[in-house]
Structure formats: C-alpha cells, structure tokens
Length: 107
Figure 1 (cartoon, rainbow, N blue to C red):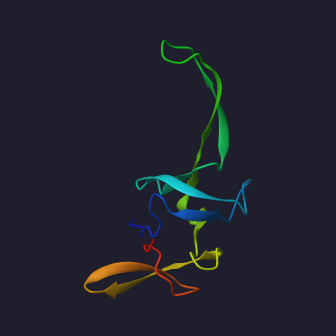
Figure 2 (figure 1 turned 120 degrees about the horizontal axis):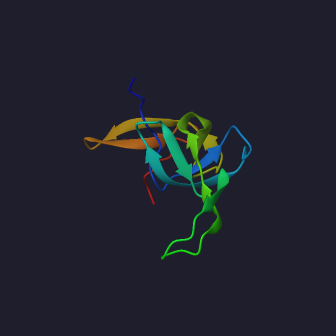
Figure 3 (figure 1 turned 90 degrees about the horizontal axis):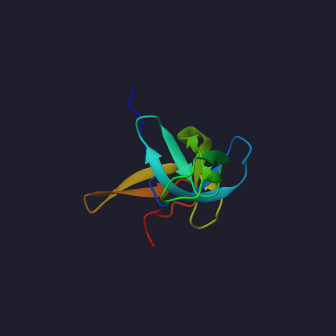
C-alpha cells in the first residue's frame, strides 16, 4: 500500500497523539517502509548502553519513532497544524498549507 508523504526531513511538525501530544519539533528522519518519523525532542526513550571503546556506556536517551499519521505539518504563517496541498507552479510541484495557502518550501 503506497502512502503519499507530505512531510519531509527538516519540517516542523505538531504531534497530535500520545504522551507528547501538543508539542512541536523538527523532523530528523523518515522511515518510508514503516511509515514512521523521528522528531527531535519528541518520544524520548531510555536505552541501556553497554560500555565500549568509544563510549562509556550507561543510560542514554534518544528519540523514538512516531507513526506519520500522528503528526501534522505546522503552517508557516499561523504556526498551527495544517494539512498539505500541492500546486503546480512553472512546471514544478510546490507544497502549500491548506489553511493559509502559503508555500511551505519557501524560506
């Protein structure tokens, strides 16, 4: 089943479900096969790390993945969650926020 991903690495997203509901963060990576994203500072999990030559070991904290359906893109204008649309401009597809109609890829 093919799912269309409207979220890219580097986008700011809003978490809609789970223990971090209501928080925002930047997407670090996307796992397209499992439909999951890793968001900076969200879904922090503790992992027991065995000591090795490069690291002392102990408890480390790292971000866990979240299903892509549990995050929404933040509107660049209103800073609220929005859905993503696509328009064609000069022969290229451009992502657009549904609420404010503003281009997302613009910096």
